[in-house]
Amino acid sequence: MAKPITLTDTNFRDEVTGTDLPVLVDFWATWCGPCRQIAPIVEQLADELEGKAKIAKLDVDANQIAASMFGVRSIPTLIIFKGGKEFDRVVGNIPSIKTVLAQKLAAATSAPAASVNK
Image 1 (spheres, rainbow, N blue to C red):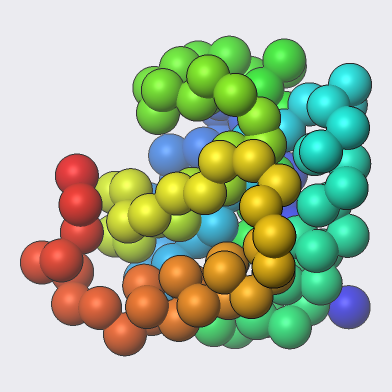
Image 2 (cartoon, rainbow, N blue to C red):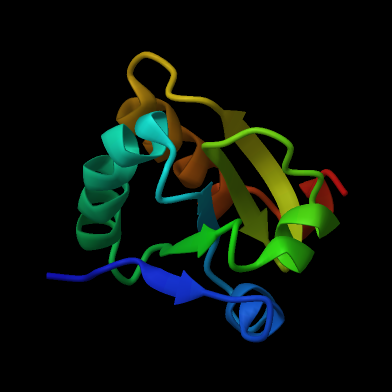
C-alpha cells in the first residue's frame, strides 16, 4: 500500500519538480479538524494512483517557507503541480473531495505542459 510522501521545506523542490508525474500536495496541520477528515482520502489516492501521480503532505506549521511560496492561507489546501508549476488547487474539505481530486489529477495527467497555470 502506497503512502503519501512527507514534504519539507528542504525536499519540496526535488520531490515536486523532479518528476514527470502530476503531484498532489496536501498542505495541512495536526490541529486542523478538516485536515484530519480528508487525511484518509489523501492516503487512498496515494494507493490508488501509485505510478500515475505522486501524493504528498506538507505540515504548514513545520514548513512555513513552502506554504508561503504558494500563498497557502487556509488549510486544508490541496495543490496539484505539473512540471513543477501549480496546475490546480482545492481549498477546504469540499463535498465529494475524492472525486474532485481524482478528476483534477486525471486532467493534469492528460494536459500538455503548456497548459500549466503559473
